[in-house]
Image (cartoon, helix red, strand yellow):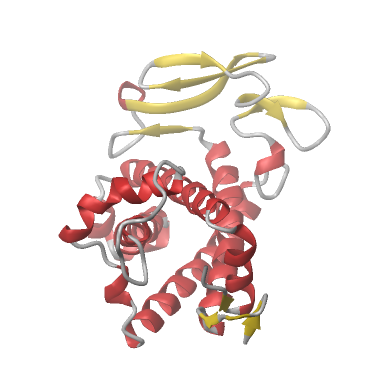
Length: 262
């Protein structure tokens, strides 16, 4: 195939593209439904059970019309953003996260859990499909960060920031991509999946050692939330990299599979 008069490379097969976009959909639904669940108990404790003395994060409303966010004991007034927000019913009230970013948009813990569980399985299956496909095709070893890649991390970032004209020498995936894939595939994804299972009362009943391994359900909740925040950070960095490296070409390759070399 030729794009703009030059021969393009078939970079991403259909399974990779389908699992990628389905994972993106599941990711956003999981964030929204997860925040819906968080709203029911808007705090995180570094403890095996609810313990205000070991509270890491709390989002609440100490008085009508006032919202606060407390991190490690330091409080900030976040009225209108966090703590006292739109309730999805045309009013403002004591809700940690606003209706605009939770699923469903009004307070409904049961519905939020159903959305979260359904799309959690979709995200997990997409992750496994992509992992297995990459391993079978021999691409997985190219995604793993190696010691020789570490010195190239900053030069690669400098290239993305337009501080360097040429990227450091690399294979199919550059050092930053390897670092991101290694972190997401082998650390964050397993962490989020396992802590999510540990939070399930049913799994806790039949596999309590898993919950204990994470320090109890409250600690598992903290790890789960932290994993989500880091995944959001990865998504932001990934989007930035795409935007700075020819967004049209990059998006076309992930939609059609064809990539135009520079």
